[in-house]
Image 1 (tube, one colour):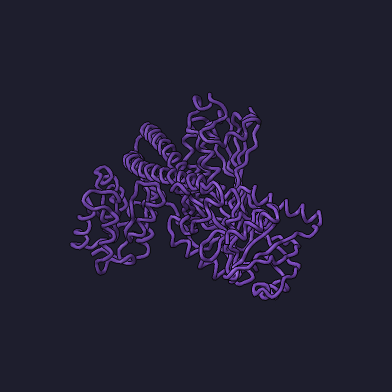
Image 2: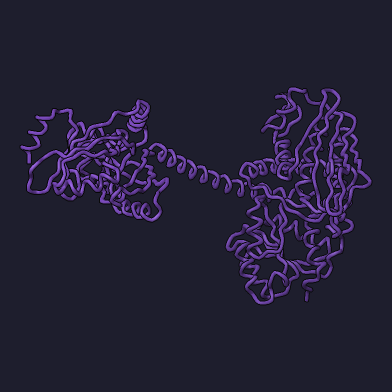
Length: 629
């Protein structure tokens, strides 16, 4: 065989486009010029069905005669390149006597349209210059052709270097190639597959592959694919995962720290504020009232700072949640001003409430957050006002059957804010000037927290101010109207003796808080027992009957969560039969949710006022759920 090939090539010249096919119709040899025409390396042509290279119905018929040696004529054909481009040519059968049915073909290109030539050259240039790796493979895993980017990606110097490998050898998991081929055969395509691939030297990298399936003229499958090296992206994703895990660990550590600090700070604060309330309720002397109010103001101011820090951390973590309840809006505003009256009186500032006559009393919304917003803004107004007044004004913007939209404004006659500072006052830890912090104190968190709380409710905090004349902070907020009866906060005098006949179990490990809560209950007429941990509480509940349990959450031996779950398992002590109120020093919403999930009915946060504790307890006593025996 070699001799006839050499004689023909020598006779026709090296620039002749020749190829040989066996009796099965597959290419077994081709000249370099022919391989160049079909945009393959010579090795890539070997084994290809001739009908995948030469197109045209006439050729298929003629080929059957040619391979039997029955004709020596020429035939017009279309040569199909690796890019799918069709080139008009003339095919001749070259006389060649062989015993194994080999047929030699000679191809001449017809005169091409210059535009077609340019288009073919452009396609070829694009194919070989793309940064993505392009390839075509057969269903038996043989590479038909590739561009240079594909070879570079896999570390092969030339197509000849890569042509001997099976495509499954490129995969770290060889079976994955079979799976992708199965998907290609079923769906006709694969998209955005991320796989681990091997280079020639064994180096592993992450590749991205998309491919489509087509059929050649003989119905054999061909797979055309695009490949990218995504190792850099995968490395970045891995680093992001590591950083995310570290951030989550830091967030968990921060949350644990906040929970612990919340408990450790609020527990003693509960005793200080609670004892102050008790002393004020015992008809102290006038000079003692002043001292006690000063103590109460200082303790509440410290609590306000603690709450600011905890709330800021919760807002940062996106863990602030709104809670809707029915409440008396008028009462809330009066109580807010009453709470701040001592501070205003000390500065000789008048506090005033201007309430729209059409403003409804009973509404549904987050009363705790509204009180916090008003407290922050009015406290700020008092802080920055030397003389004059601070006005809380509320007017109705829109009143409908089920909803009301209200406009709140807090106006003062204070120092005012320079125009260039109006935007920055809402930034973290920022006040109008550095001297402001030294002169007036504060964390610089109040306005940031207030702004965030309003944004959670779909509102915006706005400000108008003029230095030397004062400021006006205002916002709008929607509430649902309610016919229900919200909890009416009672005065200390009104609470005395109201719980006569009720028996309460106080579950608390802190002795100071035990004394404080017992004094509150005794003042209201209730009797009580004390359990120092959850296990004692369970034993005492089984020994005698209680109307309500106040359950601390963090205790030695057995915590409040476990104790509550075990109590609920005792017949006759379901949620509807024995109220359990969590007494928590944590400000985290997750702690409150966990308490409710453990079977507790409600919760009250330390430090609490007598009014808050009484209000929470009376909800269940008024329902008459259980009576003492």
